[in-house]
Image 1 (cartoon, one colour):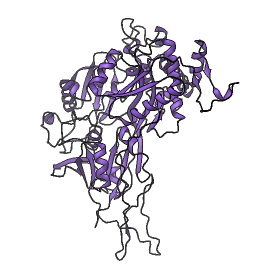
Image 2 (cartoon, rainbow, N blue to C red):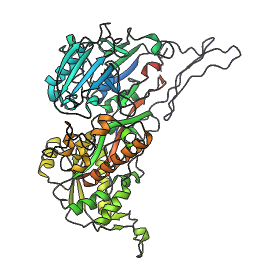
Image 3 (cartoon, rainbow, N blue to C red):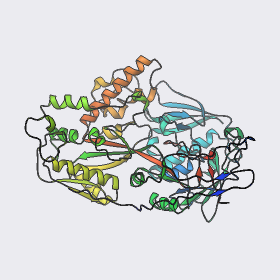
Image 4 (tube, rainbow, N blue to C red):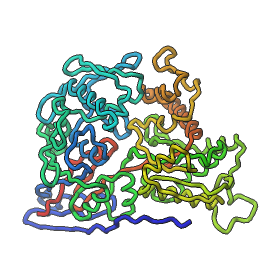
Length: 568
């Protein structure tokens, strides 16, 4: 099979170099480089003259929203990234995806972990200088609950039942069940209670560095918030004074605007990054996203031993050996390698796979080591498949990354003597086939929960034995309940997410090993296979000096330290 290439709009960015040399200073705009941040160094003179870059221009970002909309309804990645400049959260994820208090000063769980008491910081105010109160938090929570599935924050808060005020800065959150990932759910934007119901196009008050200033014909204008202390910037104040957020319907449209010098930064989700990452002229800062790519089995591959064969045949380590530029970390499990529960040691399933295959009497063929002459066409190491009628591989249409993955899988299958056809489908048809099981393999992408807790991937058909729950309080609310799937009661992830790793290094290593073992067992038993934890990226235009320090929670971290050449 010959793979079909899907060209994007690959227009080479123009290299702009402007140099103006007035008396007493040098002013230089950045040249385009490959993943290198341009810097301006002081002129080397005996008088130690420092560079005067002059005033910064307006930094131009994009989002997919027509006008400012209620932040609790913003589901687009680019819109949520823009709002991360404005709205604070009770907890904020750090670079390791661990929740750290932001608006919260103190918190504590009840013994049965059904109540969370939260105390807010006394020094945090909205941009209009009004204090952030417990009433604001409660009103925001209640609005998310009312919006239900319309809000992207609703699912994570499914265990939230109600809240009650203790005083102006303290409230108690009542849970309907113990939720090991509940702190991760408290990463929604906190709004003023009086602004909860404002219509689209309004200017909401936030608590972070940038304030919604006005809505112009060009887009939403953000100004540096007067309530932010000046010493929060390393130079005593921001380099930027204004950000313009412009509307584009997609990342592809935004990249065209970047090429045409209509934008300075472009947020690229995984799919868009895949289309642009080979552009050597682009400056890209990558970071782990919540996009996870995997495959699942349909009725055409239903025998348990056949599924073992195919899962090993399409295992993540094989994708890693293709030398193809997949935008992310190849992994069998939907958890980043840096996750605290893994204690800095990425999971390697290869030894476990070989043990399981041997236990089931399945042989792995290594043609290079075989006694027979090597075939004329190079063959990768493979589990001996049992060829059947043509396999149907389905995936969503208009997904370049998934299409290339599915076509690569089909090529491998044909090399092993198994014919396959790749069928991209519209959303409705794909959903119907997934329900009916009328396919062999389905390639899909899912947005992982912020906690990277993998029960969404493992839970449905995979029971966990009761012995896996050893260590939970026998009489507590988190005990194993035979009427529920073990993962629905929080196992095997509750003690890792709910309590964290112990401080003792040896104990942490032991707990991490147990966690990896549980993940390994579940990954091998799951009705499908993991492939890729995706990356997102920030792409830089020609006028930008400096760079962000992007993370999942704060893609534009450090943006105020940038300088934008104004063209004058």
